[in-house]
Each structure stands twice: as C-alpha cells, then as structure tokens.
Image (cartoon, rainbow, N blue to C red):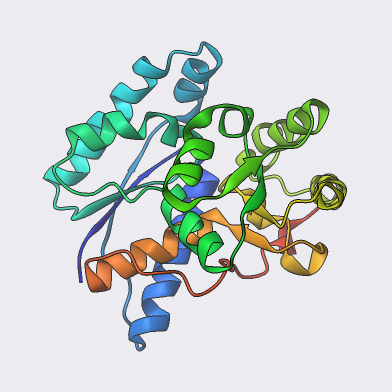
Length: 250
C-alpha cells in the first residue's frame, strides 16, 4: 500500500472527513483490520484565510508548498490537498513536488463525464465559484460547462462554509439554505450539482434534492484510495457518497 500525504487544516473539519473517508475506503476494498497509510500536515486556517482575503495567493502557496514537500520527504507517494479553495495554488505545489498531487477537479470531472453531464452548477467558497481554476480545468479536460448561483446565493453559500461548517457547526438552517439554492438552480437547465467545498456534503444528501449531486470530497478521497492501492487514478463508479453526517445538526 502506498502512503498518502494529507495537506490539511483548511478547515480541520475537512481534514478529519478526508481521514475518515480514505480509511473507510481502504477497509471496504481490503477488508479485515486494514487501514490507510497516511501522513498528515495540518496548517492554521486563520493564517491562510487572511491571505485569501488579501488576495495574496502567491504568499498563500508558500506554506502549502513547504508542507507538501515535507510530506514527500516523510515518505508520501502522493499528496492530497484537503481543501477545494486552495487548489487555486495547485500549479505551484505540483511544480515543486516530485510525487503526484491528486487534484480535486479530476475525479469529479471523470464522474461527470461518465454520467454524460455537460452542464453543472458548482457550490463552494466565493473563491472556488468565482475564480477559474475549477471552471477551466473541467471544461478543458472533461468538456463540462460550469455555472454558479447568483451573487446573493454565492455570498450565502460562502458565509455558511466559513461561519458554520468550517467551525464544526452543522445547523438545520444551513442545510435548508443549500437545499433552497439547489432547487432554484435546478430550474435553470443544469444537469447536476457539484458539492465543491469539502464540508457541504456533511449537510446535504442526495435524498434532499432532485438534481444529481457529485460530492467532490468523496470522489477525491476515492481517488486517493485508488492511488494507494493501484498506483493510478481509478474512474469513480458513483457520484461520491458519505455516511449520514447530519447527526450533529442543530
């Protein structure tokens, strides 16, 4: 089994979720008492978030790149960045590493392509929804067109992530807000929804909405499991699933 390096802490809630998903994926494929071989480097989200707000992406890339290199030196055979937003600086990390960075967009793109989806709506932080790093990679590599909710809805999606989900707060109102937004965009001609922030899948389930959901976090974790066991990215067979994470909803 290959070692996977988890570059986490943005938020720590997301990192815990990746840890659990990858370990459950290894156990499902190998059985018995098998668990993943993981190395974890967790950073302080507050420091990274301040650089995001200042639009200082070059400066934000530096600690992530250094941490990724540390994981490589410690024996990681590949690195997983446990955040969708910070894939904005993935090219800088990829350039520095001598091992693969398993990019979050690629497993989602493969799953969408396999399902025949050509147009999807992306939910995530403002950075993820409004900057081109998701949109361009999906279009160029997988032929999928992305759209996003309107400005007020984007602000609401972002605020819930930073003010609640990323701080381990799961409110019924957060779930209701996301369901309302998804049901509205379902009328705009999109074929699917990408849960493009690592925490959104903790509050929204497929049974809550009519459009197919593609959970980028679950698909990313599945790709890490495939790499750990097979040494290559495996085509996801589903849209990505998680256990019922709403037991903490308040």
